Length: 202
Image 1 (cartoon, rainbow, N blue to C red):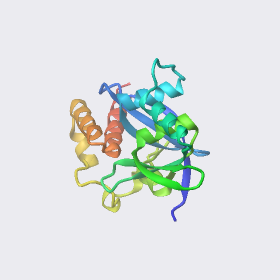
Image 2 (cartoon, rainbow, N blue to C red):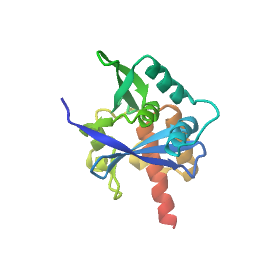
Image 3 (cartoon, rainbow, N blue to C red):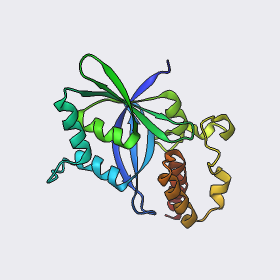
Image 4 (cartoon, rainbow, N blue to C red):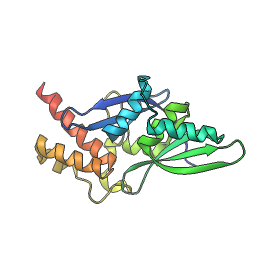
C-alpha cells in the first residue's frame, strides 16, 4: 500500500484574473509540499465561513450534513484525496458508526469542508504530492517529470509550450473552462503560468 501523508489546510487564495475562481491550498504536515485545488465560489464560501467562524442565520449545506450524520451516531473518521485518471482531484470520505466503516466518494472541496467542521484528518499519497504538488519555496514537485511519464495526464491537457503562446486573456478563459470541467490540476497549472507572468511585470 502506498505511503500516505497528512495534509493541513493553509487557506484559500482568490484569483485576481478570473472572478469566481479560488484555489484551495493544502500542505503536507511537517513539510513544505502543497497541493492547489481550484474551486468555485460556493465551495470557497463554505470553507471560509468555517475558517472565520462566521455565524450564518441558517445552517449551510455542510453543517446540515454534519448534524444529520451526528444524529444517527455516524462520524467522519478521515478524508483521503486522490486523482482520477483524467487528473481531476476527488476524495474518499471514511465514515464510522463505531462498528462499521463505510467509504463514500466525494468532491475534494466538499470533503475538506466537512473535515474542517469535525476535525477529521486529511490524507493523500506520495504520487499525488509528486505529480500535482509544489514546494512552498516555489519549486514545482512534478517539474522534472516528463509529460509522457505522467500516466494520469488527460489527453486534453495543454502542453507547457502551448501555454507560453497564449495571452493572459486566453489563459484565463482556459483556466475557467478547466475549473468548470473539474480538471483541477490543469486549472492550477494554467494559474501558475498566469501568476508567473504577472510576477515578471512587477
